[in-house]
Length: 243
Image (cartoon, rainbow, N blue to C red):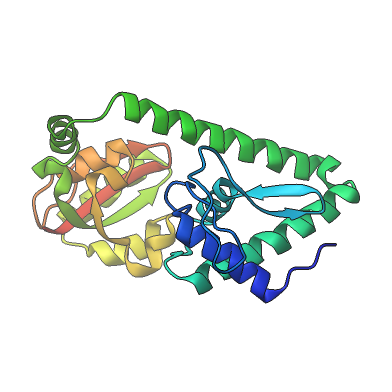
């Protein structure tokens, strides 16, 4: 395995910073003091070679991007740390290939999915570069999604049962003055039963459509007068508050 001294890494990082490679990969600096900087480059510049494998300035940026761009790269020390990390990661990857780990089904699948994700993101970015979204389009999409109705939140409880008849019986019990919380604790199949069916504050788009439609049709202090059918069963819904 190749060995890299701290001074060599600092020189490479300084070259990155001086050349503006963090933004454009444009210019390389000679490592010897007093020499005239190299002319502006037009393509990826090799920063270091690891066991015959060249690592370019663009690959350093890509490596940082794959980690979420968490390294700010606004100082020489940050660049040295990133280059150190990339060198160590590359050495580990080379050793893994040497041991045939890239042929393992789960590793090969992960590599394939990583390629797919990077290519898909590149296609999306390229599309929006060619078809920029206007402010008017953004506003129209926002207005469509975030209507006053969709922005409302409901403090809601519910009782979930298996059969429609049981839901109707619960609605009849509520009409006779029985307590919703106690009925939920006694009858509900949902995990919220111990809390009296409480779901907290939810928006219409946070629940399945039939539930959301029924919930948004109720006023503060009302409960559903008819059972609400979803894929989970039959619900009786109580809206305690709206904001």
